Image (cartoon, rainbow, N blue to C red; front, side, top):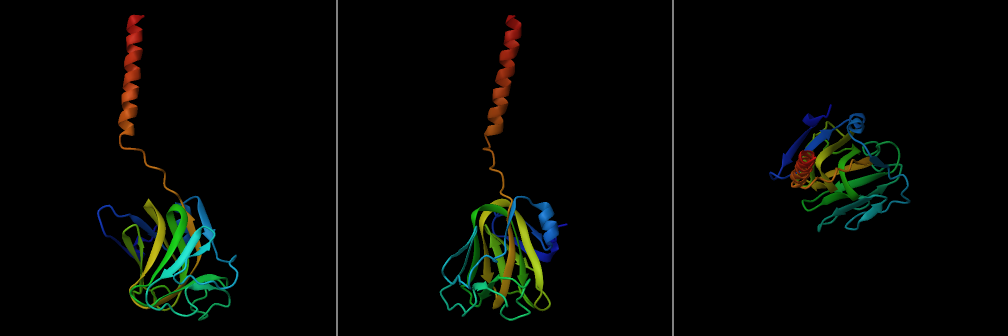
Length: 215
């Protein structure tokens, strides 16, 4: 069952994307298909993505902002993780993010459009609301936690999207790993196509009946 109660989802317009929230990876996997997984374990060194896009296979990571972005943060964090144990997810490489000013935005951009996103997070929204997530004009707010914990969080969308944005609410440092994404939505049919097909079918039936009468 989707844990929709674990997050607040707000649409900013009537045409905004509708999201179904998940906090359990097994449930998310069962509800989706055609997923890819990025663990960051193939990344060499600790490249940062401060105002510079970092391409990791099908993902592009970037934390942008005009004010100062902190030190070694906003980079791939190789084990042992910084601030162990609070920021360690599974003992492997992860993306270490810091949003410390109102203009800071962390974005995950996909090489092609997807309709599903899920990842493991450590210390996201610990003790208070610190970060919100937006997709195609819809804002989703992960629930706050009691202390720094590791948890899964993600969603499926009724509209394909190419990026997920994490925006500043209050000072927040967190890590992200094991990013699952995919489930490309089918291309919608033009609204006029069903009428066209119906017309073609009716025309064919009419011609058949005329042929029977002539015979």
